[in-house]
Image 1 (spheres, rainbow, N blue to C red):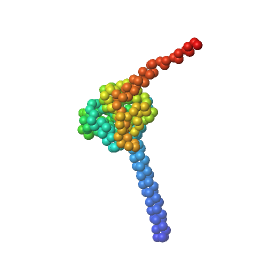
Image 2 (image 1 turned 45 degrees about the vertical axis):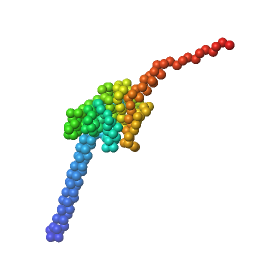
Image 3 (image 1 turned 45 degrees about the horizontal axis):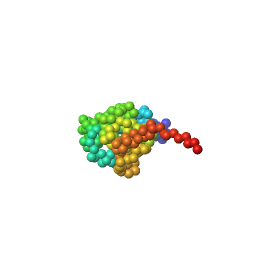
Image 4 (image 1 turned 90 degrees about the horizontal axis):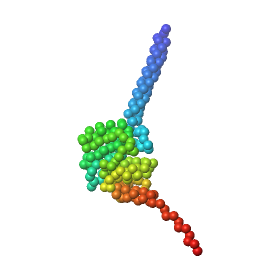
Length: 227
């Protein structure tokens, strides 16, 4: 075999080896990328997937402006605070830093464990508590400050529940969506950061008046008097 043929064979062999190396490198990169995406999905899914509940509540973190608005409307308040659907715990933790004894109720256990970790890291674990529980199975009678990130499908049912359980001194702060029939005492913020503040004395009276009207029979028409 001539030197020219040997040279051509070596070049061809080198090209084949290079193609195999590129192919192997591509497989390795693809595998690493796929594995990273699977790991990211496995970590993120428990946080963003709605827990099983009567009404689906997807986890949408509160914005910084929403947290500030909640604290602003409650700045003169005292007593126990509860965040219904507390998510990653940011409202509860912020309220604890402002002196509240704060609790959060959330059905997604991953979010509850993460909230407890955050509270410990922020140094407020002694003044906070997080519970894995369905809001419809909890009584909120012990709380005088209620924060709720709800959805329209649940707000009418929640009106009745809170009006029947809360003390008349309570305040309720609704974020993102207002209650359908309650008249807010005031609002703060704008757009998606708007919060609505409701006074328990007002909506409890409204509920009692509504029940009274339902229980009072309508007067029957008097028969025509004979002529």
